[in-house]
Image 1 (cartoon, rainbow, N blue to C red):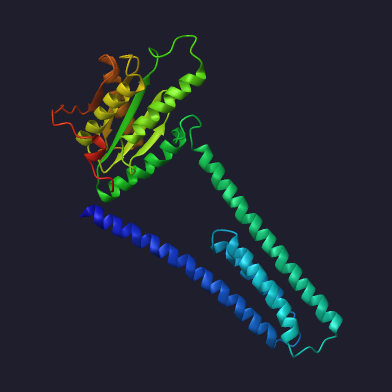
Image 2 (image 1 turned 120 degrees about the vertical axis):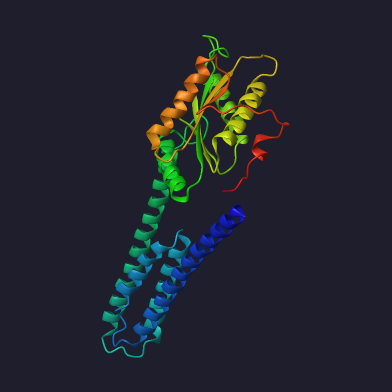
Length: 310
């Protein structure tokens, strides 16, 4: 029931956002037509330049450059039409033509500036996304982890929902020799990360926070459920990497769940302590703080044991 409510709320937000964008388009188009009508009633018919430039800059409210092209083209056409349709030309023709030319130039310059601004915003967004992405695995890096963990902690406390954090250490020392090149090592790390990612929900957050260390933020998940998933990850990942070479890769995982008095530092410290317990006990195991007993159950895919929606 809760997942259905959340899906309905998400759909409503998307609809409202889309309606807001459409409303902006309608307002800008209406303003453009109104400027044209007013322009026809002016004695000289030359005062439309600045208003047309303003509506072009208003197109910044709408993403994408296509709408800006539309408004600029419409303003250009209406300015020329205004010259022929205006019946109140009391100034000499050369002055009217000069002013119309200035208006057209202003429209072109405004459109050029707005399009440049929009393209620059896209480039900046792309660059920011690249900064937050690990180049080897293609998943988010530690910087993204630090930022999004703060957000998820606030969200979890606000709505009184469970949040678990898993830190995964991939021990590749047994997999590589001194002569093993970095390219093959990176390929193996990428393969491990992809396998981990396939075993978690879309709504869980996955990061590479160090060379051989990954983190998962389990939203809407308590300690018991998080451990079930991590146990499945450990078993499945280690068996898929090399089926003919047993124990060449060891995966140690530490898990902690957010408590009422926790902040990011406390939660990460407890997950790291749980990871240390796993490694201290020989590695290739999952530990939690506080400890959670393993319960044998019929094998069920971990990704199916929890809802894919918040």
